[in-house]
Length: 284
Image (tube, rainbow, N blue to C red; front, side):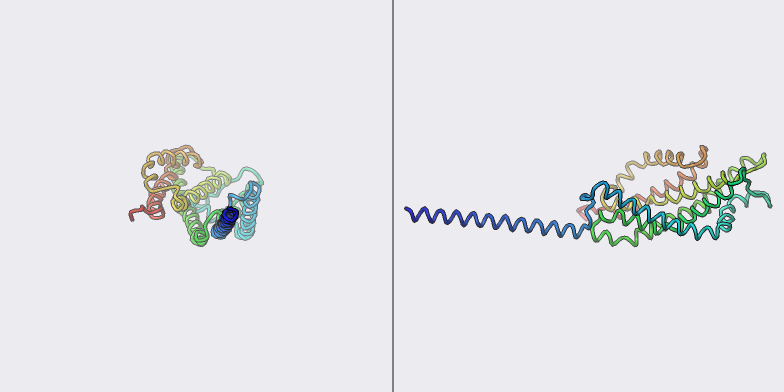
């Protein structure tokens, strides 16, 4: 009987030892999976504190401002040419020899600073979008982080296309429209008012043109779908006109429509992009 008890105790010890080995092996496998996941995912943003996020954001903003300042100094050397180039949409509709006016002594100097800054912003846009990518990339998988070049290329391309569309189409149309409305009066247009309008139009349209890129990213991670965009199209049109009313410098419906029109077309393009970039149905 003593022998039976000893055998039973030995069997219990062996079972306990096996259970402990299984628990140890399970813990090792869990750590290996966690290590593999971290390697695949990169720096996990969920494990970053608020101040680490804030520090990373401050770092990217600092670098972006640095790039803008570099191109600001380059643009300052050509600021007269930039002024002439940006004044063409208005001057071509004014009588020959007509010039823009200013009402205070520092106004031309401040206008040149703004011109150089806006030029620097457009020239530095590839580097700014690269900094944006570096800020969001830790939250992406390794294969997704390889999209850095397409992201920077297309965000820069659409940003510059938006600025070009505003310069060659929207802004000249606005100048001609407002001058035609006031043709019975003498136009005294100050550089402050003119370039404030120019900057808001060019920057506003450039930002609007980023809509397809934003939709692509949201569709890629499964937040947006083409069905959702189609379903809420009529609400989107209302929202677009509200946004256009906010960013346009004047309250008239003509200027708002010049902003809202491209936004609606970009929204329709975004539906197609979401359909292509979004997850495919399981049956496909």
